[in-house]
Image (tube, rainbow, N blue to C red):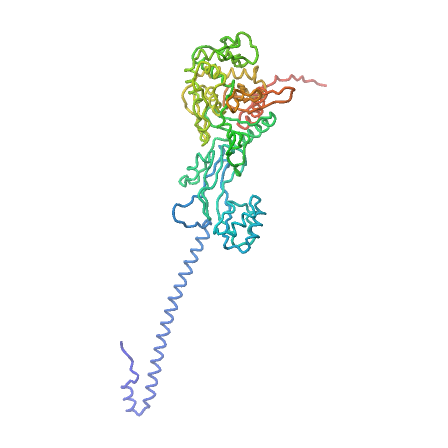
Length: 594
């Protein structure tokens, strides 16, 4: 580095020779040196300011870009970080066949307490008991003033309740975000949906798990993140389900019944379009399970799936159809109906005297126990059992509900000859209404086996053949005759050819000591349209009594049939079935002139 000397000797010596002032030269040199140093300092400062400005520019540009990116994204709640397996809160929706919501999720809050942080525990306990009537102020105060450091108060809150708790102003009352399962339609399809509750819980989230119905059956699918929120699509039609339950509830009240059940099923796909059990419940506030007494008295009991009953004469069509399939008779074959039919100490009688003989069709129309029993004797017990097994009557239904296995049929210990006779007219075997719906669908859809399902199907089932199309058609014609001129005359619905069979069975006593004289299970198993079957409908009433006359009437023709007819009248248009209306002859008009 070249340094500029403070005293330039050459110039000073020259100046001395000329007699000039050398001090001025030295001062000038110092001045120039200071100016050079100032210029260098200024250049260094300007460079530093430039670098600092560039750094601030880059920083503000980065922050601006980040803020823009955040503004363009969807806001999300922060997730709590915890060790171990995370709690999966999201649960898929459940929808009907048309995509209408039947079960979904709702963001809400839980309420918990840190008693040690409370300023006035007495006031907090008193006000909480006022907001939530099910809470006891004394018990809360005992918990708040004890040794507990954490206390759940309410698993879920409404916005109004949350605001009231917030207004208490206690620092020890805290809220935690969570999801709750919501059933927007209340009790509609409650037995099918079942309900959900909380599993593992944390203050920031909770695990929603199914406890009954399809919520429990498909719990893994509904909770699986791999399903990416895809809804569970049921076969139900929400509109038809609501109409079914409304009519069934009215019929149950009108007929003074203890309970009721109905199943509406597509005969080709096996889809359950509507299924109801009364009394029902609201899955948003699911009642407790009965710990004592008869479980069938609980509103949680699904009579359509879990209830197994002797369904009476609705079984007679199976005996006739099997006999026709075996070539033992046809619709016009005359059968001996003289009675009573004696087997040991047992006497089989008809409701009234139908004469010495009846055709196979009239045995169904008039519902002759004697005639059906004689046909069953020709079939034999082994073949009868095999045929009912093909129809699914010997095991629990495969419907997708956690309760289905508990609805296994009650079969005789020994399939004796007397069992063969009584089973032919629906006594000595107990099955559920859903069993009966599947059996009728398999028999009447052309003769191929269908199994009931609660999942949306897109094509008919291709089950094994049970009976020929000819026998299936003859069976439908017989059932149509029952409505036209038999025990189900109240089942006629204008515009729809309804076919069906009534069944009235005495209820067995709880202690196994015979049957009640004044308590029955009345059932109407129907198909519509009978000439081109699309749906089967089963309506069952528990202990009905029609009391419009002096003497109570309990038979299915007076109780279950009118309820089923009104149900068909309401739901058939909803199902897209056009009524067949007879056109009137054109009225002649004569043109006259003045």
